[in-house]
Image (cartoon, rainbow, N blue to C red):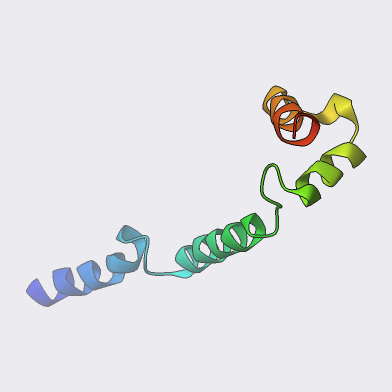
Length: 76
């Protein structure tokens, strides 16, 4: 009886801990891609950022982007 309960506990370890199993690898991969993608965006106020915003339609800008564009690109 004792051996059976130990086996059950060992099988449930992968289900109880999120680090074990394939879900962790998917989450880790998504986190890695998010970090890598954030490194590709130009810094706010840089010339590349101003050029990128000039190319996007103004209807797609957020209020914060419009304020940053005015502050960093127009009032330099």
